[in-house]
Length: 457
Image (cartoon, rainbow, N blue to C red; front, side, top):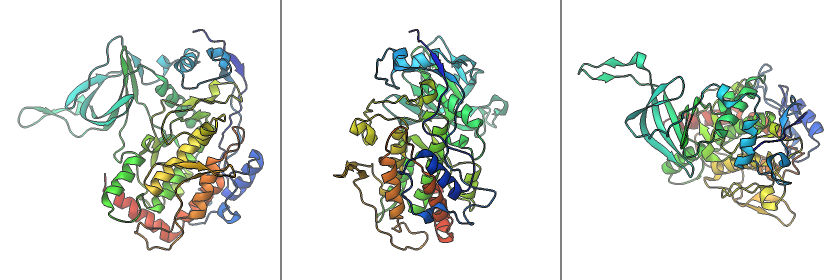
C-alpha cells in the first residue's frame, strides 16, 4: 500500500538528559516537565550519599531533547482514519517500506526464498549471511507466537579430531534462536534502530540493556532471530527460583536486589524513551537477567552503563519518530495483568504502557505474584497488594525492611500519569534508590544475595 509520507520536526514525549547531580537534575527536570506526579518523594530523597556516587560518577537526570527531522506518518497515511493501531501489520509495513536505510542494508539481516529450517535438539543448522553454523541443544521456551532454542555457535576453526577419531569442538558461545511463525522483520527493525540511536548518546549508556539481534533470517514461512543467551534467565525465572528455595517468608526476591533491579529499570526505560522508542510489551518475562550485582561498586558503575538487566522481545515496539508529533494511541492490548491504567480508563496512551510494565516488574520482585490494580473512590490507581511496614533485619535475611514510602510513591507516580504530554519525573526515585543502596549494611546485603543467586542458575 502506498503511503503518503510527511516530513516534520519531531519532539519526543519522553526524554532523558545528560549527566548532572541528582539534586540539581531533579529540580531542573521538574521545572521543565511541569508534572507533579514524579515529585512525591521527600526532599531528602533527592540527594545521593558519597558512598553511592563519586563526583566523577553520577546518575542521569531527565530533561527534554529535540530530535532530527524524519519521515512521519499520520493515521490517514495508514488508512486508519482517526484511530491508529501501532501494532497493526499495515502500519508497521508502511513504516518499513519508507525507511531511509532499508532492512537489507542493515547488518545481520538476510532473506531466503525457501522454507524455514526445522530446528531439532542435537542437530546443526546453518543461518544468516555470512553463513554460520549453530548446534541446537534444547528447547528452552515456548510462547504464543514463537519458540526459543538454546544453541552453540560452531566455529570450524576450532574443530579438532578427538582421540577416538571423531570430530569434536570445545565449548562455544551460547546463543538463543528465536523461531517465529511469521516472517515479520519488525522486531529486528526496532532493535536495530534503538541500538543505533543509543550508540550516539553520551554516558551513561544502556546499550548492553537492549538485546542485540545478531542475525535476522527471514524465510517464506517464518523467521529465525539469533540473540545472546542469558544464563540467569528472566526476572520471572529468578523470582521462581527464589520461591522454589524458600519454605517460609517473602515470596519475592530480597528487597536489596529488588531495589537494584528497579534502579536499572528506571534508567533503562528512561533512556529507551529518550530515543523515541516504546517497548510496548514490558513484563517480567521480557526482562533478561544477563548479570548479577556481585561487585561492590555496582551502583557507581551505573554512571557509566547498566549491565545486569536486558530488555528483550521488541516485537510490539513502537517508534514514535515515525509518527507525527502529538500522536497518541487508544488500542487496548489483551495481555492479562499488563494493561496500563490508561487502557483500562479508555484514555489515550504512549509511553505509559512501559511505565506500567516497570511497576509490574517491581511488583513481582517484591510480592512474587502478578500485579492487580484498583481505582479508588478518589480516582487514584493503586496496587491491590499492600506493602509491608518497615522492620529492621540483619543482612542476608529475606524478610521485611521494605521501603514502604518509596514503593508507594513510585507506584502511585507511574500508575497515575496525568497525560501523554506529562512524562513522569523518575529522577527523585533514582536518587533515593541509589542513596539506599549506598548504605553499607544494605550494600552488603545486596552482595550476599547476588552471590547466592549466582548459584541458582
